Image (cartoon, rainbow, N blue to C red):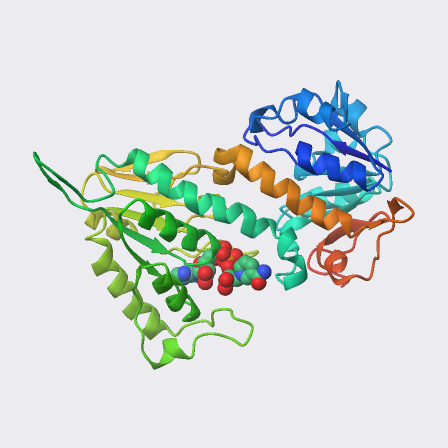
Length: 379
Ligand code: NAD
C-alpha cells in the first residue's frame, strides 16, 4: 500500500494533508509513504521531519503519486495533477463539489475513487474526521485576531494613569463552530461580546461562554429548531423583526464577525450596506463567509475593503492563515478516516463500500460520479 502526499498546487493553500505524526501512524498501518519535497514547508514542516519518521521524499509531484494507491490532498486535484494518478487510486481531500460537476466528471474519467471530507456525517463516530469543525474552529479564532489587528484600539478595558480605554464591543453573527470559538477568543481578549443565531439551541451555548444572546425571542423563535437540530425557515414577519433588532445593535458595535453558512448554498446576507454605513469609522467587520458569497454587503474576497472608515475584512482561506495548526488537525482528520479503509491484519486497503461514512463522502468510483447529490440526473 503506497500513500502519496503531494504539495498543494494552489498558491493560496499553505496547508498539507499529512504531518510527521500522521505519516508515522500511516507507516504503522503498513503503508509506504511518499511526500513531495517541500509539501510541508508552508506549515513549518521541513522534508527532514517527514524523512525522520520513515517517509520517502519525492523530488516531484509525479514521483510522489506514481503507483500510489492513496493520494492525500487538501484541495481537489486539478486535471493536470490527476494525469499522474493511478487508475483506481483513492483520493481524499476537501473536494468542493457543489457547482463543480465538470471537475467531478474528470475525476471519474480518470478512474479515481474520490472522497469529499466535508461531506462527512456529523455523527459521534465521525467527529474525529470532521474537517468542517477542525478548520472552522481555527477560522473563528483567527477572525478575532485579524479583527484586532485591523482595529485601532485595544480589546480589553485598560485603566491607566493616563486614562481609561473602554472594552471593545464584539458582535458575532452565527454561533456554530466558528462563531463559538470567535466568542470565546474575543472574551479571552477582554471584549464585551454579544452573538446571534437562528437556532434557539445556540442561545445556551452563547451564554455559557459569557456572551449575551441577541435575537427576537418570540413564540416562533422558540419553535424554530427541527428535531435534527437545524434551523427552520422563519416567517417574513420574524425576519423583519430580527433585521430591525440587528440593525439597531450593529450601530453600537466596534467589531462584527459573521460566520453564517448554509451547506451547498450561497451564504445568507446578514449585514446590509446601510448597516455598514451606520457603524462608527474605525469599526471592523470580518466576513468569514466571503468565499461562499459573503454575509456582508461590500465584502471583497481576498481584500480588506474600506467603506467610509469601516474596514470589511474578506481574507480567503482563513484556516490557512494558521497553517501549522490547521494542517495538524486536518492531517489527523484524514488519518482517522483512512484508518477505517484499511484492514489492519492484512495491512492492505479494504474499503467497505456500504459503510455510511464511505457512502456519504464518495463522489466518484469506477469511472462514474456516484454520489446521489452530484451524479448526472437521468431524465
Ligand atoms: P455552519 O458553518 O453551517 O453555519 C454557522 C452558523 O450560522 C450555524 O450555527 C447556523 O445556525 C448559523 N446561521 C445560518 N443562517 C443564519 C442566519 N441567517 N442568521 C444567523 N445565524 C445563521 O454551521 P456549523 O458551525 O457547521 O454548525 C452547525 C450545527 O452543527 C451546529 O448545531 C453545531 O453545533 C453542529 N455540529 C455538530 C457536530 C457533531 O455532532 N459532530 C459537529 C460540528 C457541528
